[in-house]
Image (tube, rainbow, N blue to C red; front, side, top):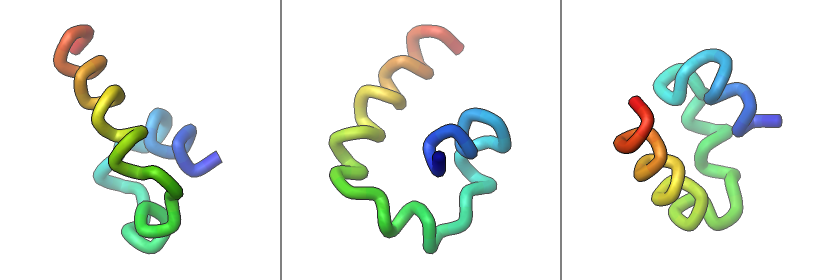
Length: 40
């Protein structure tokens, strides 16, 4: 659900405490950032 919050409210608005609890965060963020570069 936390990832969906980023889509709805924007990544910068996700509380840091939430981000710090995401397992494999780097593994998830890298492809997401690449997708953003391609489509935005």
